[in-house]
Length: 191
Picture 1: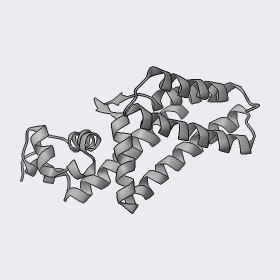
Picture 2: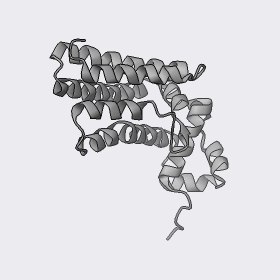
Picture 3: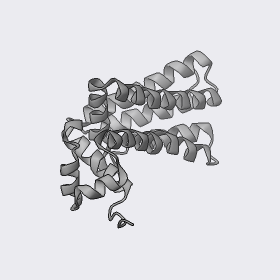
């Protein structure tokens, strides 16, 4: 019977995301991650069959933690749809989660999607779920279906713009503008 791995699967995934944000997917190499974690490659193979398996698990983790978990947690609150939308907007502009630079990671994920079609498919699926959730909140707030669809897409595009500009020009006003728009559509049904 083998020894228990010192580092968990999540440790490896978090290390991979840190490297992804710093160097892109090309930098996410077993040797590099093992060095960063202060362990051997054997620990990696305890959790993953190979590098492509890690890549798949990274996207699974990103989708679960960055989309599904947030939606479930918001749905499990007593917040009104207006308050849920505001809370979602605040969560979306967090620049650090689990000691990871979310701005760099979101940009690197989309760069990776530009290189590999299966990654683009996975990201598109998660993004569609995010937009559909916002659309449902807007419908619950009282926006008509056409408005809800347009505003949900606008808000998501603004978020992607926030991620993009924050990499080279991280001004508080960019965050504030995104939050203000979310607040506005949470209240004003005439948009």
